[in-house]
Every structure is written in C-alpha cells, then in structure tokens.
Length: 309
Length: 309
Image 1 (tube, rainbow over the protein chains, first blue to last red):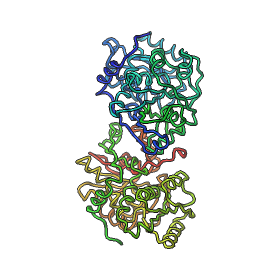
Image 2 (image 1 turned 180 degrees about the vertical axis):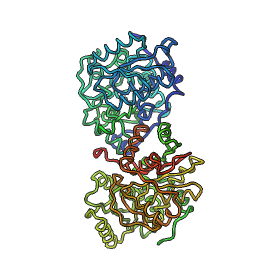
Image 3 (image 1 turned 135 degrees about the vertical axis):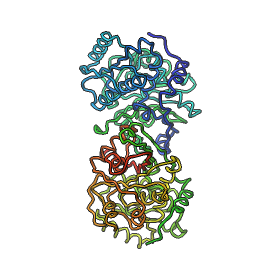
Image 4 (image 1 turned 90 degrees about the vertical axis):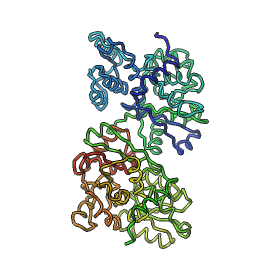
C-alpha cells in the first residue's frame, strides 16, 4: 500500500490545481432546509469542468507526472465520470490519454470522452475484462495508470472540493459526500482534519462501505443494484484505510429515496444532478445521517443523459 | 389602450422590486460560443424565484396595488409560469391570489401554485372559457386582474431582467429574448432605450410576432403548434405597440432546432431550461438572428417537469 495522503497533500493539490479547475459555487435553498430541518450548503461540483469533482483529482495527477510519464501518456478504465475527467485534464496539458471503456457504456459518455481528445478502447463488460484490457494496453504501450479512486493523488485532489467548502462556509457541523470507491469521501476526511464530522452516503443496493465499517474490514464481494451508477464500486484500499477510522458514519438510502431527493433538488434549485449526487440528501431526509445544524453537502456530479430520463 | 410604459418605468420597477427578487447570475460557455460563433451572455432567469422572469412583473404589481386592491386580492388566468409567479408574489406580501387554470394544466404546476398559497379555480381548456371564468370570478369577488403580459407594470417589471444584464455586461451588441405574449421582449426594448439592438425569438409554430411585424398589424388568429408552451400566445396590444417599432427583428426556429439548443445548453452548462427559453439560442444557431459580437440572451425560465421528459 502506498503511504496514505494527508491534509498537507490536499493543500498542495489545491495550490497546484487552482488555475486549472473551476472554483464551484455553494448553493442554498430555504425550502430544502425546511424539508430537512437543517441548514444545508451544497457544493456544486456538477458545475465543475467535465461535470464532476473527478476533474480535480485528474488535474492534480497531471501536475505530478514525471517527464517520462508525460511523454508516455496516461491510461484508465472507466465507464463514467473518471473517463471524461481524465481525458479533459490530459487534453489541457497535451498529454495523450487512453480510456478503456466497457462495450455497454453510455454512448453519450463515450462521445464526450472522444470529444476531449482521448483514445477510447472498447472491452467486454465485466470488471475482470476491464482490468485485464487496461493492464495489457498499459504494459504494451508503457502508459501510466491513473486509478479512479485508489490513488493518493486522486484522493488529495478530490479533497479540495471539501477544502473550498470549509473555507467558504465557516462553522459547518458536518459534511456529507456520496461514497462509491471512496475517493471523494476519503479526500473530504483529510480536508476536514478531524475538526468537522464527515459522513458518507451510500445506496442500500451497494452498501459495501457500510458493511465494511461494521465488520472492520474492506468488503469486496458486492453485486451492486442501484440507479446510482457512480457508486457501484467497492472501496479502494487506501480509501478504506482513511474512511474506516475517519468517517463519522455511513448513511443508507434506497433508490426510491434517492430519486425523490433528486426531484426535490430540481424542483427547488433547477439543478439537475446525478442520482449518485442525491444520495447524501436522501440520507439526511430519511434520518440515516443526523440532520442538525449547518451541513455541507458535496454534489458530486451532474452527468445525466437527458435522453435516458 | 393604457399609456405605454417607458425606460423610467423600468428603472422605477427595478428600484421597487430590488429587495423582493433575486439578482440572477450571468452565465457563459466557451463551447457554446464556439458553436455559435459569437460571445453569448446568458441571463439566468430560470434561477429566479418561481423559476421564471415572470416573478419580476408580478412582484412589481404588488408594490403598485392601491390599499383597496390589496384588500380585495388579485386574479389571473394562466396554465404556466405567470400563475406561479403571481401566487408567490402575492403570498410574499400577504395578498390573496386566485388563479383560474384550465383543467388540462400540468398537475405539477397546479400543485406548485397551490403550494404558493393561491386559490386555484379550474375551467375548461379553451381560451374563451378561461377568459370568461376569470371575468366572472373577478366581478363576483371584486378582484384585481393581473394580465400575464398586456399590462404596463408587468412589462416594466420584465424589463428589469435586461436592465440588470446591460448593467452587468457592458458593450453588448444585441440582446435576444423569447417572444410569446411579448412582456419580456417589450420590457427589454424599453430597458435597452434604443442603445442596444433587441431581437425576439419565436417558434415557427407560433409566429404571430414575425407575421405581425411584417404586416404592420397585430396578428390574433393563430393556432399554435409548438413544444414551447410559454410562447403559444399572441402579442398583447401594449406589447405590439412597443415591439413593432422597437424590435431589431424576430428570429424563427423549429421545435427540432429548439430542442437541440436545449440539449446543447444542458450538455455545456448542466442547466435544464424550458424549451421556450432555448428558442433564442436556436435562432442564433440557425442564423435567423445574426450571431456576431457580444450578445445577451435572456433565459426566461426553467420550469420543466422532470417526469414529462
């Protein structure tokens, strides 16, 4: 296991990516506050470049590549936001990016990834096929792997979203983020440096973080069933090592609760967010995360396909 | 015909509603600019209270009611954004509002209107039935009618959106707004006081403004067929009197072009806007409004029903 990143790594990431990323706005809604019974501050990472917080981590990786890695190019496997985020971050600094995408990927996301200048390779849909296709291409072409969450640079970069939120809104009682692979949640825990409680929010149909914390060991046997496509993965190794001791708790919400929270956000703010991004609000509404005081909520992304709605 | 409102009325409206409305942000997108070949500045009235610029006019009306009118309450007939805007503006100042809605109205809009504390009366779907039901109730209960666009206060209030845009973005070459009844377009023409060209954007399936300007007289025989439900009405009397001499031109876009513009806005900005609000961008893309220089575009509203998408 690589050494765990720290608060200082989040600060360093913030400094290095400042000119590359958008400082996203913080949004509030009186009517959502009334519905929840707490004062919520939404950090709008759906308005980040490439439509998700992921662009922070991939941008930070670009600033940390060695000259050899820059020349060789980067690779990852992803069907989602990490693919677009890596493609765009690489394009901005003229590094070649290869993305291995499963053949069942959303055509819009594939088009967007190609639009950001990446080379897209198609592989079969299983996790094993994705990993082996990626590994093979990586070795063949000498590419540098950028894992979507189990990477200390990606974690530090993701943490900068919560760092900005804590800077902008003083005296938060808690911060809530969705949790899939755990990049955003672990980075947020580092950013809060033990001074603010940080909760993860997870779909009931992909509750490996909740089970893993209860059992004291990382859960890797999961058959995810959830509409929150960004949260189907299991926690990474580095991520679990930070989240297990550091998270104040993991809330759970059903898909029905999540879609209802997504509709509430749209009705009250006109913001169309991904189902994954609505899980924190769903957990505050169903009480699986305590809704008291002033709470920061990271809206992780907004890459919804209008046609599929 | 009432006396036509002037630039000074827009200034007066801006002063009176300043503390009641939201000063909405101006948004830009490098990639939309590339697609259009001009520099666009979107005034985000979909983020206005009640989800549309309409709240400006109805708020201004509230500040101009006589004590008798305040006591009696207000009434209108509307199936759309004006209903919600009047209900909310009246609720904020504790004036009773009655809204006559056709029985075919969107249930979500009806629920929102009731949620803003209005009394909702249901009538048959035809325009004649709406008007007679409204007239009857108005006389019966002594209510004060607030027309959705053919009212000098509503026009002055609507103009404050463009006034803010012109204040915030100097040196605009043109401003474009959608045109249905003509409240927003006529108010914007007043706000620009002849110093900036103002274009209207209209669906090909409801092109009464385009035809009316060509013929030099208001067109009232229209059988609208368009997805832009906010633009199905014909120009009002006051509105035509301002728009006929004042508009730099009326662009036309098909529904297909409008929906494609709506998707472009979503893809590039994550903002989900009403079809009506996408007509200006569609006209800039299809060339029916000249796309040169720096252009302000008023996004009129964002009241899209997620379920109906």
